[in-house]
Image (cartoon, rainbow, N blue to C red; front, side):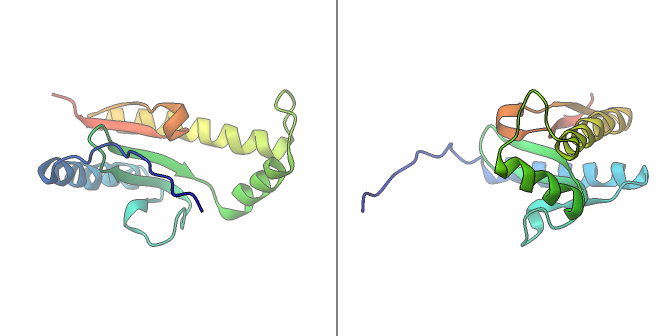
Length: 140
C-alpha cells in the first residue's frame, strides 16, 4: 500500500491559541444572551453533537475563531440523504434548499448579533468553512 504524506499548515503558537480560546468563550456568551443555543463544538467528543451555534477554535497559524450553525438531526439528515443520492443543483429538492436557506439565514443572524455585541466578524471563506462566521476579535 502506498503511504501518502500531507503537509499540514503550521500550528499557531500556544499563546495565540490561548487568546483564541478566550475569544471563543466570549463569543459563546452573545448568542446565548440573544436566546440562541450555543456550544463549543471543538470541545465535544462528537462532531455536530448539538443543534445551534457551534463555536470552535482552529489551531492552525492562519486559523481563528469560527461560528457555524448546526441544524437538528431531522433536517440535516434529510438533506444529506438526498444530497448523497445526487441532486439537480439548478433545481434542488425543497428540503435541501430549506437546509441551505436555514444556514444562510443563521449565518447572517450570527454576523449581526456578534457585530452588535462589538466583535469584528465576517463571513468565512465558503470553500474551506462553508457558512461559518469568522470572528477576528473585539472591535477597537
